Length: 257
Ligand SMILES: [Zn+2]
Image (cartoon, rainbow, N blue to C red; front, top):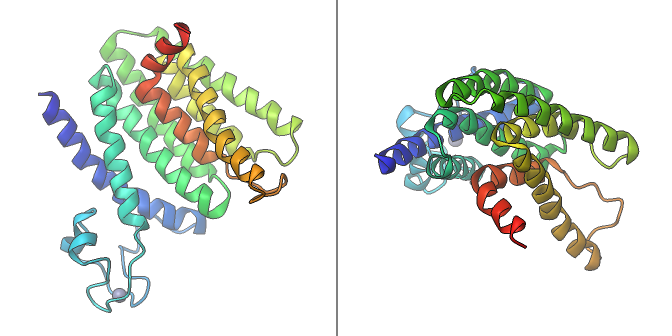
């Protein structure tokens, strides 16, 4: 039963990952995410359904367009694979299947926002708002299924607390973080808060540690200047996903130090 849930969730993740690729491609350019249908960027040939199977088509076509043989960047296949792997991990790690849809939505958003922030140095508010609009009723569903209504309260407080903290950081450290980070932090805080207050703390601590280590290394190696802007979205996304997946054992290890 458990293996079946993980396999089904993984296949679903690959398909959602394909949609993540469309979002990453079109949302920053303010294009529609439904039309036109997928096409080759070089020759504009429409991509046939059998050439649009996540990851498998990319491997089968050896990373080239069937019509014009232009190289297809591996990004979309990597986004599909990454989303699929995260979905499998969520099905494996989450204590309750009731919470799975909500956290799958968050994982897909985490992948999309990371890719967009790395490429464009910004986090589109539309993606954050759409995830909040979709995630909120799914967290209510999760609370109904697990009979844990207090989780909604900690989700609201976690989200508001994270938003307020990053809002203060946004004004305290000029040019440190963007307002997109403030909105996204609120979203992360909400999803972490549903799991518990300790998860909120763990998620943001992990984000800062994960962001701080490479930043310190690059500074030490004089690869970047102190003023160099580093997108913070991917670190928030990573910290939150790590805390959702492995927060319980990490918190347990900390409290035993
Ligand atoms: Zn082509």
